[in-house]
Amino acid sequence: MRDDVSKATRRASPIDTTGNAVIAKAQAAGRQRRFGQISIEVRRSASFPLRLFALAAALVTGLGLSAFALILVGVPAESLADEFVTATILDPMNFKAVLVQAAPLILVGLAAAMAFRVRFWNLGIEGQMIFGGVGATLVSLLHLGPEWARLPLMGLAAVTCGALWALIPAFLKLRLSVNEIISTLLLNYVAYYVLLHLLYGAWKDDDGFPHSPAYAASELLPTLDSGVSVSLVLAGGMTLLMTYLVAQSRAGFYMRFVSANPGVARALGLPVANMVLFVVLVSGSLAALAGFVVSSGQEGRLTQSFFPGYGVSGVLIGFLARNNPVAAAVVALLMSVLVIAGQNLQVFYAIPPSMVQLIQAVVVMSVAASDFLVIHRVHWIRYRA
Image (cartoon, rainbow, N blue to C red; front, side, top):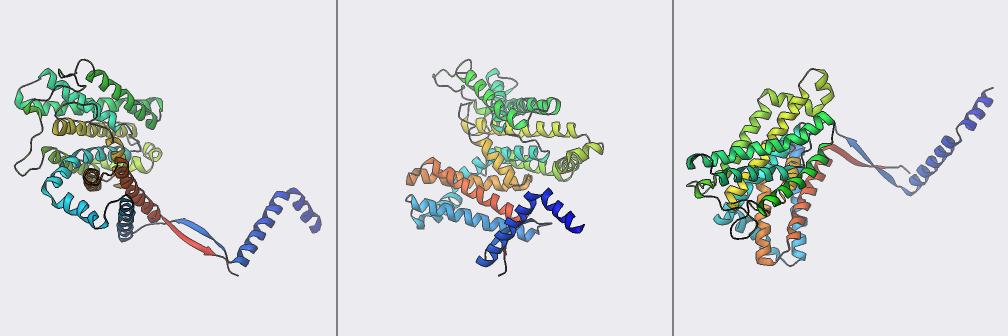
């Protein structure tokens, strides 16, 4: 009877029997050839020293690969340290440019990091920046308020317009379950064409070029006596405010629940929808504030090219900072160094802009790879002979 059951089992599962035979044959061949396989396991926890070491190793690897690529295109090896350290950080003028460039990068990085904390993938940072610049310019063109209050009114209008623009994808997600990745991306194009409509239409300057009239002197972000722009002070203040919001407030406590498991948070009675809506409005306001900083602190008017690239940079900063506001400010400062150093390389060594983007991509991919190696343990399993 036992033999009959065995025969019936073999007849019932010919695929399994054949599959096991194939696997056994492959393993036997692997043992004979001393081959093995790669095993990937998820770590239960990763210590802070391990994370720090992995990040430092990733930065060294990314910068090393970038240096090798620059040498291949004609940059002398002995000049690389001078361009990235001496000419960028130690030179007062270039370091000032680094700080000016860092301000909007910090703001867009904070915008992305805050939205990602509640699992809202805000890829519409550029559209929110556009409406931030539009709101600020509207106050300038209408001459709203006295001159001493014009700049705060421009900032308030920028934040309001950015929040309202971010409200659209938030409503679509919370009420109609529309994927925010699609809606925020598509709304970027809508915002861009609104900008073009204004700059080629009613807001076109008298000189015939597609930009708004220049802001008055009272509508420009000033520079402090130390040489630091008010925009950097504003970005630093927003960093501290977001740090308090995340680490000390009740909203930050709710964010951690929503990020970990929205379903469980909803079952516990937490206001998940209201929390997501609040954080998305904060994210849109920060992105719009970046648009105000660029238009009022750098361009001096509303232009059609004041925003490109900031959306991608914000997403990368938020990702590399792991949604931490302080880390986002640090990463934005380092990215600003790469931007200014890349501009110097373009001027003095005729490096194409694509090479600068390649350097940024290599560094970002190296850090992303280190994050994978921190979370996972990779080792080689070798078959015994």
